[in-house]
Every structure is written in C-alpha cells, then in structure tokens.
Image 1 (tube, helix red, strand yellow):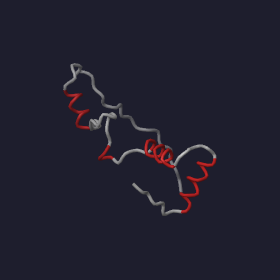
Image 2 (cartoon, rainbow, N blue to C red):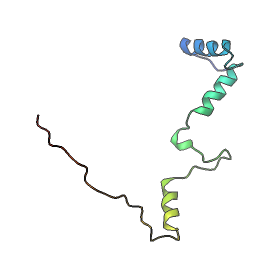
Image 3 (spheres, rainbow, N blue to C red):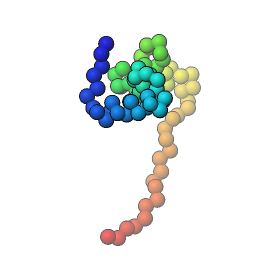
Length: 87
C-alpha cells in the first residue's frame, strides 16, 4: 500500500517527530494517530474483539430487566435561583 501525503505541513510535522525520535517510522506515527482517534459513531466497538458497542436501547432493556424496579433514577428538579436584571 502506498499513502500519499497532500499537505506539506503534515509531511513536515511527521518528519520533525521522526527526527526527534518520537516515532522511528512513519508507520508508528500513523498507528499512534489511529489508536488515539475516536471511531465514527457507526463503527464504534465495545471491545477489540469486534462486538458492537452498547446503545441507549441496551441501557433501557437492562434497566427494564433490573430486579430493583423500585429504584427511580429521575433527577430532582428544582428551580435555580434567578436574580432580577435591569437593562
């Protein structure tokens, strides 16, 4: 596989990091960048084994199947203090 860098600034940054021995090879810089960047939402996985990440529907199903149904998770609602402001 051949990867072509279109941005001169990116090439300069990679070469600078390689000269400072942050990355011995270009592949190491790419690997570090890919590992540290988040996946797009449709591609997220829960574990490295490829299983899909839990969704909101999974959370709702787990809460509905809970043996502790008497516990409520509703937040306490109260009015925040407001000061009168004159413009």
